[in-house]
Each structure stands twice: as structure tokens, then as C-alpha cells.
Image 1 (spheres, one colour):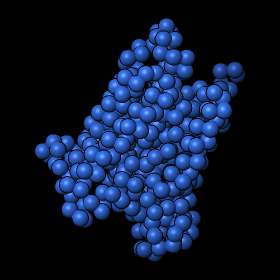
Image 2 (cartoon, rainbow, N blue to C red):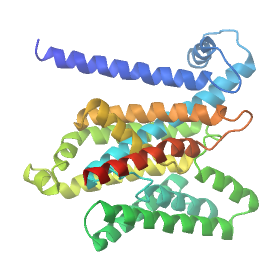
Image 3 (cartoon, rainbow, N blue to C red):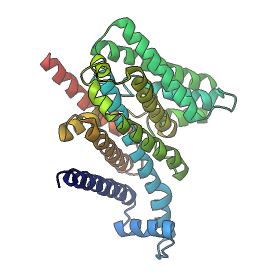
Image 4 (cartoon, rainbow, N blue to C red):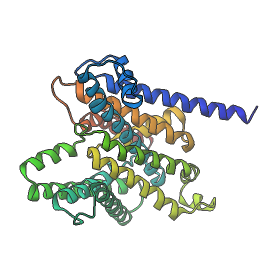
Length: 342
């Protein structure tokens, strides 16, 4: 009985998480400038997946399947991946302010993706996701070197991240200004703010596997992340290969960030806010914190997308604007709490 109870508890929690995720996707597909009944969403999915034969208006079915549901799925994948990146980076660096956006990883991924798309770097052998991955790795390496030169501590890594972000954002702007046409420049600058408008089902074939693979890798290293809470020396004394863990988890974070940036652009604050909210709800053990953060990030991004489509009638806001409106005050709150404790 004692062994069965935890298994039942975990199964119940997993089932509840799936219910919450599917409910959020349901809302994301139903809510918009054009009101569509929730029953129509279910019938549309049944028609598309199982050829159920429900008589539906072609326009409503097209809006649900081809526009809103694909956006919701990609938004959920993006939110989950960025939240996981935040958990991993905060744990490895023992820094509550670490996330892909603040550390310049998103900016580096944006530069890599734009370099492939505009300059043709790689001569056709590099795709945008791969270019974004290389840019993310280079950005993190540069920030790490700057932080080591500046010294240890929160201030060093954050200042290095700010410097790296500014550098790669400047490079991206230079590439767009120098080599892009007017139409390309307009599209890329809007994309860099975080844009789900052009997302369709083919994008989900990259976003969903990237988020799921990242979640699996992170869960496999949950105990190692717990050990890193006491520092790398303590982790090594427990038999954990510190260097291999760093390489695997930082590489995974870079992969997830690159995949999402190549699809929707650079979106800030998700990886900062969601892990802290999840820690308040479920604690600091990574076996629970990682899936809770992934779920929280997915739900947050879905509802951020809903707001981006409905906040201003007749206009779609970049989703990065919505996440920043929530994330910037949360960032200030975290900084204020740390100063009070100091």
C-alpha cells in the first residue's frame, strides 16, 4: 500500500496536469475576435483526426484548426520550453535571475537565425533552427567568459548577460539594416518581438518534439539539479559528473531556446517568472518543479496569446509585449526581494 500510494498520487497529478493543459488548449482554440462555441472546437478536432462527419461551417472549422489550435499548440510548446530553460539555468548557475532572455541566449539565437535567413550563412546547409542553435551556444559561451572575467556572483552573470544581449541585438539590427529588403526588415523586426501570427501545423512538428525532448532530458537529470542547489563541489562529492551535466543541460537549454526562437522569435520573461511561481506552488525538488514549470509555462503562453489577439480589437499584438507586461514587474519584484534580504 505504501508503494502504491505514491504511484497513484503521481498518476493523479499527471492526469490533472493533462486536464489543465487540454483545457487551456481548448480555450486557446475557442476564444478570439470571432466567437466560436466550445463544442465546435471538439467537433472540429473529431472531424480532422477521426473523420467524425460533424456538419460545421467551413470558416469556423478553418479558424479553429488552421489558425487558433496550431497557434495554441506552438504557444504551449514555447512556454513549456522557455520555463524549463529558466529552471535549468537558475539551478546550474545558482542564480534566481537567470533565464535565456536575460543571459543573452535568445538574442544569440535570433542573430543566428537572422544570419541564416538574410545572409545565407551556411550556403544552404544550415537551417534556421540550426543557425539559431549555434547562435545560442556562442552567446552563452561569450556570456560565461565575460562573467568569469568579471568575477563570481549574481551581478557578474547578469551584467555579462546584459552585455551579451546588447551585442547580439546590435548584430541582428546591423544584419537586417544592411542586407534585408524593406519587406524582410519589417517582417523580421515584428518577428523579433515574438510573433505567432504566421505559425501553422508544420511549425508544431518542430516545437512539440523540442519541448518534449527537453522535458525528458531535464527529468532524467532532476536529481543532479537537486544536488546543484548546494553548489558544484557538493554535486561532485555526490558522484555527479559536473562537466557532463553542464554540457548536457546547457546544450538542451540552447536547443529548446533555438527551436522556439526560430519559430516565434525572442520572447522574454517566461523563463524568469514561471519557475519562481512554480517554486512557490510545488517547492524546489526538481522531480516536481520541472513538470510544474513546463505546465505553467504552457498555460501562461496560451493565455498570453489569447490576450495578444483580443486586447486591441482588429489588431494582433506581438506576444512578447504581453509577456513583458507581466514579466517586467515580476522581475522588479524579485530584484527588490533580493535587495531586502541582502
